[in-house]
Image 1 (cartoon, one colour):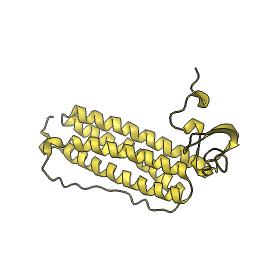
Image 2 (image 1 turned 45 degrees about the vertical axis):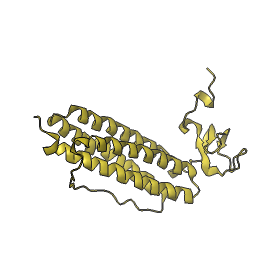
Image 3 (image 1 turned 120 degrees about the horizontal axis):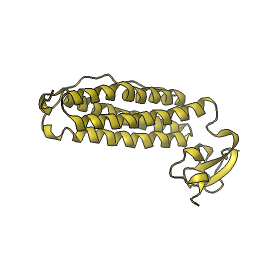
Image 4 (image 1 turned 180 degrees about the horizontal axis):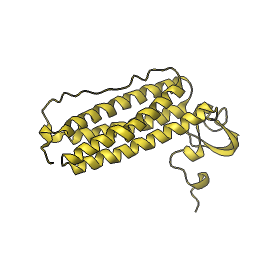
Length: 205
């Protein structure tokens, strides 16, 4: 079945997706603020990193509606109220929401788009759904570490990177204070989870 975008269910789903991604970005920004207040800057940066990606997803969906520019779309939708002063609650809520987007929401949106003849849009829903699954896995890993009190502790010696200055320390625990920039332990992340690191923490072949 092929229909025009102007009369399609896909246009409604695109606006729902735009709204959902926009709200996710704000929720993660709020969670990041909570993490910073608790001295967990590593979680602040994880939430902000993800929030930036949600913003990009929102823009992708919004631009797909460009043929309908000037119109107003009325959509319904259910969106979570994830208000908690507990960081573990925030991480677990993020895991749930990201998995729901991947497993249900975007899978259904992709199916509808394909049925209506919008193969490229269907593929976009599927690809972004895959990214949401990655978000869920990342949040789940940090939730696991926080719940096990291993966000800054390890059973074996491992590498830790200061997310402020980049200093790398090998130990069973992240330093209480970075030896270089003097920022607190909250800035440290396990080297395996740090952005843009080479094998073993260096770039030698």
